[in-house]
Length: 131
Ligand SMILES: [Ca+2]
Ligand SMILES: [Ca+2]
Image (cartoon, rainbow, N blue to C red):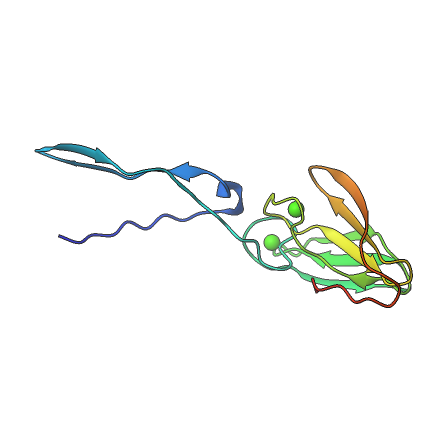
């Protein structure tokens, strides 16, 4: 007999381990644990599973993020010439504000868990792969 079970996962479930437990009159069987991977959308700044509308204005070094509830957040980070490279760099399920500066080949990231990261990787004129 085939059956299925649906579970709704959120970003907070990322990395949790689950087992299935099957029970019938003959006894109980438990499967090995499987790790759940919940991938964030490319611009899910609050980790609720939906993408925020957001823009980066290099001339002001400002990120304007509009959340689903209509609340806007302005984050001052980056500047003219920077390329926005938002992604979930520390794996907490929330997109991090980040820029790549082609003039010095440096990544500047603001993560919720680990604070600011500055990573020199790339050379003058290089383009980041994360976009
Ligand atoms: Ca979101
Ligand atoms: Ca993150």
